[in-house]
Length: 497
Figure 1: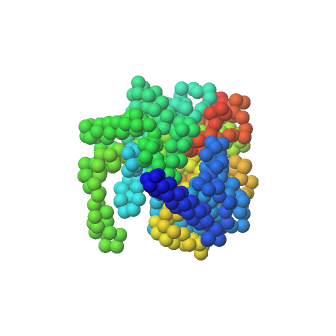
Figure 2 (figure 1 turned 180 degrees about the vertical axis):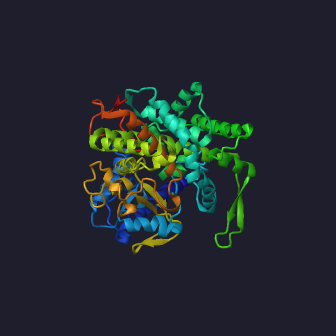
Figure 3 (figure 1 turned 120 degrees about the vertical axis):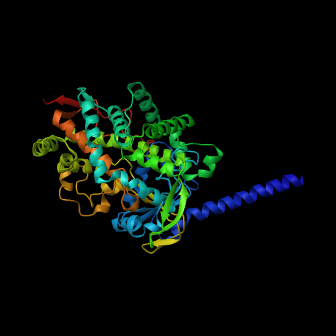
């Protein structure tokens, strides 16, 4: 009896303690005077999210529009108090002016055993800064110029096959090929191409179970660890570890020095240490080990981030131009003028295609691959007079901000002219983020998309297939902004010459 009574008491005390924790978390924004929707205990404001009907960004969009006069609004992602920024000056404050207070993404998607866990995306602190500085040299102007011929050749290889339609799968295949050849100096054998593509597609498979796992990894990491949940199945993790390890080892065995992304990773791995410099006296402050796993993580991160995001950017840009014949004609005229000026394709020529670049930027405004940015404050602080405790999550809803008529009039219209003279507020257009954590692959992704679009428009007239229904619908369980499988984007191609 005594044991039963003690057990009952323990359960009651536990429930009371848990209820207090829930109550405290659900009053976070009320205590700070921040406008927010009333949360549901435990689920917060995310009941619609876990129903698999809406993507995360739809709720950020909803709360953003619900309080149009606020510079920032609160919400509860389950029991996590989250601040959604609406004002671009506050966004600049977080991304740049007070970056040292908001340097990291926080818990997000990856379990400790994941190949991505040690990637620069997931890394924090001075280790992140030292590694980023090392990797940045891969994306200089000189490096972009040196990989251009390989990139251009890959684009022509696809278009010379005389395709009748353009679909996402073709562009994903192109993104994998250009990544391997331009960044790793590796040509994929035809026999391996289909397998790599199939495995890569499974990483982004938008199933409800994958979505649930990723949600638990982000918001309930301890529970996810207890349940042994993973970002992707172990067999896929092992497969891509093996692929990336083989690529790096082949570079060593070949003794080739291409001065590319793979070469930087090989050099880091061979040195086994990376120095962390004191920013004041420029002397080595400390070092950290560069393991084989760390090198592989950086290799896979770029593959992971670039494949789906870049192929979607090319697809959406083509779809937008297919629906706008005037913009398509103007882009094609620019291509003829620039190619005549430079005597053909070159890095310099593509860089001079300002209108096509504006088409890409406008697509990134309307359909950014990643719809929001997240940051976590690493110490107690305040934003616009509102006190935040260490660990408070910050959301910058870039898709919603970029579709706000206050920032871009008539936002539903595809209008590349917005970017021809430069926009008034750069913090209203953040498809690659900004500040010290701006996307490493930004220049490569835009160069690849602009190069592909130039080759495509020079040779084909684009029309949206009747099979593609408008308006586009997006997959609610996908990580990136992805068309629903029931309504894929198909673009009809008619060869011009």
